[in-house]
Image (cartoon, rainbow, N blue to C red; front, side):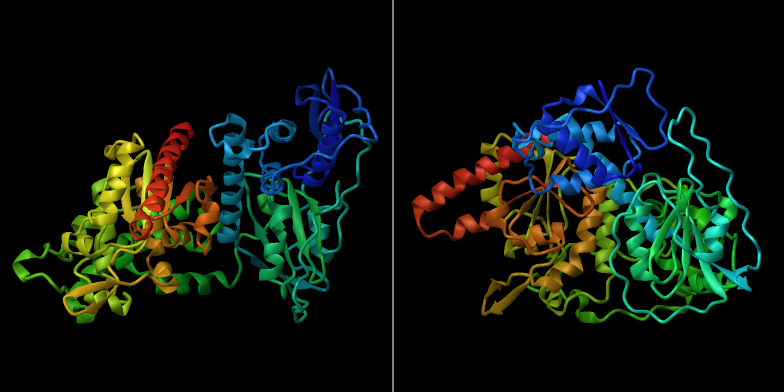
Length: 559
């Protein structure tokens, strides 16, 4: 049994160097104990592993593995380094291992990476700096130093780390157990006022401070700031970032003079008519509220919302532009009834954030209502008959996302009922997927076309159209909660991934969107209808059926 000790809990570079040597030496993962500086020595701990042979080949990994490993190293799970060692060991003989989302080790690593990305996003959103005034080079209200950290059974000599109070006094470089990850060069900035600095307290779930310090350097380059967490602190002096020991919540200021102004601003932009407690609860969990000065006003603002909305209704709203939803091609008696705005404010306004989230039919109806209520729809929407929303069960095996409604979909108000939709239904059946296991929708919810006499000529949505409808699509994915997303064509692929990507090169690959959700790109069935050669059409149709079957098999393997 061998033991390896890393310099820091997020020491990716140290892990990579050590793991490379282990793989070259042929040492399997089960024979290695991974420790972090400060961890107690294992009762049956072993020595250092032998050096690899000089002629041993270098390990080879897929392009995505280093970034995955970098994220997993920041996770709090004590078995993270062993998990990565195991994946690296297997990748030498299983080249496509990372593409097997059903593999337990791969699934666990992907889940860790998603958790780290989510933690970083919450840190960016909910960290709040508070100003500390300085007198004669020291804080006006001195901050107490944190208690010394005792490391039991640590054979390494104790290091003399300066206290957080000293760091806040001069913001100089602190001694650390390992070299900090290189940070991007900060843009040139005007020197901050010498009589102020800014301190923030945050409690991350994972070891992300060292990696995310660069974000705050870029964002607040002109300020001198410190970020305190229970295990580590970061200090920016306008030139470089220094990392020091962890701190206590009491070491950070409770409030500053600017908070009253910030709370007044937050209250002024709070729109009671757009209050969505379920979305607020999802994006701003209550565990972060104690770090947000505006959070203390949220219960009051929510309690006042019904009254304020009633007053807004009584005053009367500015009617939206008539072109917003001008129906065409259907006589009035054939048009689907449009939902009317509710005037029962007290009946529909949730009392607080603890209100249960909308059930599935209500969430679908609310999405349609919110789309209809927009007064900034693209101009071409005035020619469409109606929005065409998604259909299917919640928690489906597969969620299919197409481009936009076609002529028949626009008239009937249902997705995938035109020629391409009928071809998709046939292929789905041949792929062995029940229609009850699929949810279908489109990235763009209205039919975009050019009128040409009695015909309506389809127009592809542009980047602006995709961007406009993308929040509605992401919200729909959120309440549908599919096992796997299947994007049909370039528009859907761009809407899910957030950027233009080549369908033909990525077709049949298992990818992940910016939120970490798995998706499977393939062609749109309309592509098959446009092929002029019968042989090519038959060949591509068989391949499309194979794509749908592979997507279903992949989805069934996902946890």
